[in-house]
Length: 312
Image (cartoon, rainbow, N blue to C red; front, side, top):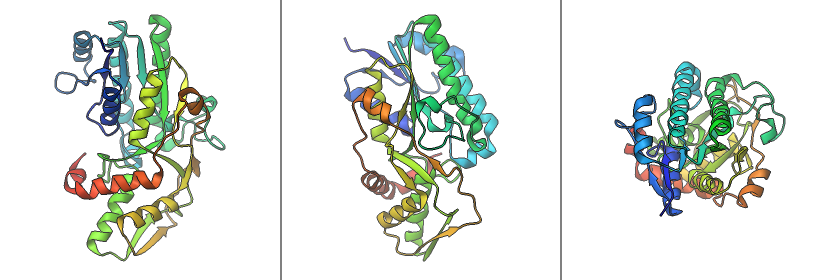
């Protein structure tokens, strides 16, 4: 009989890709959703978990967004995400699950790390103020997971995911991350015949990006090990925002000027994960190049623009 996996956030941007990979791997997957499964309501979570009886729980569900939502809604980000993780951990303990996968984020790393971020840096300092509320909830996930592992024997797994992009991303200005925001901006510029696109900062900031299908594949590979410590999941490749914008402009067919408003901030100068441990633990590297992943994402966005622009 196939192992039963309960996954939260199965309809989300990353969650739907994780669900696909879990099913492909032969597990019996259940992805409960509203109204019967409300992660903010403990009673509904406990009821669903007891009915499903999973051996493994994978928790990628989160209330999240780009810099705009981090700046405007830090309290919402903190409250909702802490309540969700507390509810699903407590409910899972009632059925003695064997494994709990807490999907984390590179935002949980301290803001003062010099060089690429290693797992040993995870608890080494304060978070960057711009992502403090959201990033801290990912630390709460890990503290909670360890507490339940110690008391109930559940194996806790803590993948910290780099910046994801791909089909079904959120493209609305308020909640989008940098890749989706740039794709929308340059696609709109092509459609309107604009001769210039203005971008924030100097473009010198270095970030890391991973195609969402690859990230989901890594989650399943981790789930099939007993590794129970922090594990970075990413490409390990740094790309400047200027390089990213130039590539998006090329792939969307924008032939105008890629301009920079240097009065606007760049943010943290470099944010790239060290993925040495990932390669050792998973015996795996993400197969999709940035160019190929962006091409697939842009093709999907242009073919589904109305739907994508409406998704909140």
